[in-house]
Structure formats: C-alpha cells, structure tokens
Length: 207
Image (cartoon, rainbow, N blue to C red):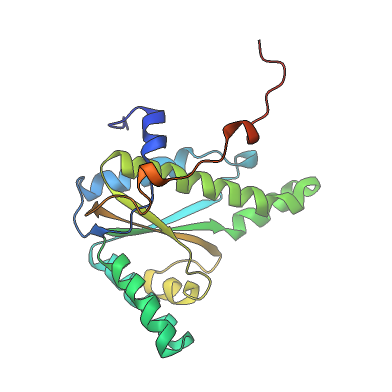
C-alpha cells in the first residue's frame, strides 16, 4: 500500500479540486484497494468499526449524480435547480464517487454493550468517518487524482439505498467525487489563507 508521496507531503498536497474529468491515472483496482485498506485500518472507539463505503465508478458514478439531480429537481424551484444542476453535471464529469456511511446497527450494538458511553458513540462514529474520509482523500490525491467532498444527504439517501442496494441501517455522511484534475485546486496554493499557528496550538512542558 505504499504511496507515491511521503506522508506529510501528501497531507500538504491534499486540496479541493472541482475541475476533473472521467479518466484516472490509476486503475480501478487500486482505487478499491485504497478504500478497502482505509476502512479496514481507520481507528474507531472501542474498535467499533462503524464505517462503511460504497464505491461507484464510471457509469455507476454517473447514475448516482443523475439520481441526485432528479431528487433535487423535485425539491427546488427551476431557478435554483438550474444553478444546482451545474454543480451536479460538474461532479458527473468525474471518474467516480465514494459514498461514506456509518452503520447505525453497529453503533447501537456498542451503545448497548457500553452503557456508560451510550451518548458518546454517535459522535465517536462521526469522528471515525471523518478520519476515513481524510485518509482516502489524501491517498487518492497522492496517486494523482483530484478530489472534492459533497454533502447532499439526507435528501438523496432513500434513492441511493434503492439504486445501489444499500442497507437502510447505513447512515450516509458524505459523497467524495474524484477524477483526473483538468486545472489547479479551487483555491490556488499561494491564495490559501492560514491563521497564525501560534493562535491554534498551545504547548506546555516541551524540553
């Protein structure tokens, strides 16, 4: 599973790319390997292993965004849908989408098993999902893909369950779109603002 970039170089390189096309610099088998490896090894509280993923590639990826557009067309005014659909069609141009889920049955199992922390498990589950999303995002961009992260749930949840045979107990968290970049990141490196790190990190007891 070695990446083409050292770890912190990959962390710095990870950016948001909206301009992508339907090609991929790596085979679909490598994309599957990255996602499976991440879901397997992402840490989770009490080793609860709540994260789930659905990988949609090529025509299945396009179908997902067609479904999303159809759902939102019913919910939005024609003017608002026209704007939203431009975004949907941009995502549709990509190579694939990863749907990130958290398994509510698994969460309830651990809530029952560890009653003292019952109210904490949904939050811990979200943290696990966030880690999985970040790992995959960083890994895909280290392989030369451009990635962006979307959140069109919950409106699309039921339709996606039907279209892709997703268990109703899986709770959709995010949609990660990827493809070969056709231009730079949404915010150029030289224009990305950073708040002073001294205001964001406190250190005590360092020697």
